[in-house]
Amino acid sequence: MLMGSNTTDAHPIIANRMKKAAKAGLKIIVIDPRRIDMVKVSHRHLQLNVGSDIALINSFIHVIIKEGLYDADFILKRTSEFEALRQKVEQYTPEFAAGITGLTADEIIETAREYATSGSSMIAYTLGITEHHCGVNNVFDIANLALLTGNIGKEGTGIMPLRGQNNVQGAGDMGCLPNQLTGAMSIADDEKRARFEEHWGVEINPIAGDTQTRTFDKIENGAVKALYVVGENPLMADVHMNHTRKLLEKLDFLVVQDIFLTETAQLADVVFPAKSWGEVDGTYTNTDRRVQRVRKAVDAHPNIKEDWQILCELATQMGYPMSYESSEQIWDEVRELAWEVFGGISYARLEQHYSLHYPCPDENHPGTLLLHQHFHEDQAEGVNKSSFVPVDYTAPLEEPDEEYPFTLTTGRRYESYNTHSQTKYYADGVKIKQTEETLDIHPSDAEALNIEDGEVVEVKSRRGQLKVKTKVTEQVVPGLVFMSFHWSEVPTNVLTLNEFDPISGTAEFKACAVAVNKL
Image (tube, rainbow, N blue to C red):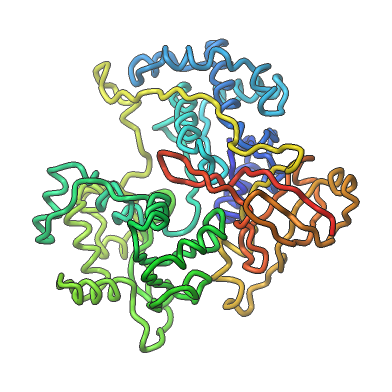
C-alpha cells in the first residue's frame, strides 16, 4: 500500500524495485490524490481527496474489526488500547468515509480486505502523509493499521517511511533532532546524556531544543537573532515564502554553509563553502538503516573544507577546542558513544561486507535486517506491548471557497529534486525533461476557465500570487491543481499555508486554497 508517495519522482530507485516486484506478482495499491506514474503498475488506485487519509485509514480499521479480519492473538499478546481504537473507528463506516474521501464504499471495503488477508502487507508512505497539520496523527493511524493485522516485525510486512530527501536518516541518527543525541538517544535520559557529557567534558541541557518551525517563530518575536543554516535552503523550501524572507532579513546575523550559493545563501552575512559528497570520505545511512562507505572521487578547490572541519574550527574559535584527524575518527567516536546502535559497524567491517544495517552493537553482530521481530517471539504475555493511538479525522485547515475555488497541493518533479539547487545551474550534461514550472490542471477546469495548455495564468492565495504556465493533464482531478517548488522564477511557496503540525512542526504543504485567473 503506497500512501502519499510519488515514488517515481521522489524515490526513483525504490520505485524501480517496486515496479520490478510488481512484474513478479507484488500487488500495489496506490493511495494518492493524483494519478501518479506508479498507478500504471498498480492493482488499484484510490484517488482520495487531499487530507482525508485518517478518514480512509479509520474506515479500513472499521471494516477489518467488523469482519473479524484482525490478528486477535497478536493484539492480545502484543498491543494495548484495542478497545479505545474500536470505539474511535465505530463511526467511520465505509459509507461515512466515502463522503469525506471521495471514494466509493466498495473501494474502501475491498482494499481493507486485501490488506488484512494477504498474509504479508507493507505500507510505504512519504510527504503526502506527513506534510499536513495532522501529519503525526496520519502516521499514528498507519501504525494502528499495521498493528491491527500483525503486519509488522516479519518479512514482507511493516511500515516504510520513505525519507523526504537525502541526509534525513543519517542526520537524525547523528543527533540533529532537537530532542535526541546521537543514536536516537533521548536528551532527557540522564544515564545516556551523562555518557556524552563525560566524553565531551561539557554539561548538556536536558531540555529538548526547538524545531525549525518554533525557531522561526522566535525569529519573529525577536528571541532568536542569529541563524546558522547547514545544507538547507529554507527560503525556497519553506511555506509562505514572503514571510520566510522577512524573517531571514530580520536576523542580525545569518550564516549559511553549503556547496552552492543557494537563494538562502544569497541573503547571508557569511557563507562557508563546503565540500560535496564526491570530495569527501565518510559513511552514508540508507533509508533502510544500511550504513555504507563513501570515498573521495575528486579533489576539491584548495580553499574548501569539509563540513566537520568548518564546525571544528568554529567551535575552537568560540572557546571549545575541537579537533579530529579524519571522518573515520569521528565515526569511531559515534560507535563508542552510541554503541548499542553503531558499535559493531567499523570501517574495516564495511570494507569487508560492503554495508551493515544498524542496530549492530558489536563486531560479532551481523546487523539487523528486520526490525520489531520481538513482536513475534514466544515470550510471556504482556511483554513488549505497543499501544494503539486512536485518532480522529480533521479537515485541511484551508478549504476551497467561492473566492479561492481550487485546492493546491505541492510536491516534486523527477529531475529537479527538492529546491533545484543541485540540478538547475550547476549540472552540465544533466538532461532535464521539464525545464520550467507548470500549474497542473484538469481539462474540465481548464475548459471552464477558457485556458489552453501552456498558457500563462495567475495563481493567487491569501498570502501571495505568481504567474505560471499551465499543463492540462488528467493526473489531477477537477478542483485540484499541483505545483512543485523547484523554480525560483516561480516561487510556489509564496502561496502555501503557514500552518504546522503541533507535534512535529511539519508544515501543511499539501493543501491550501487558491484561485486561478486567466490573464
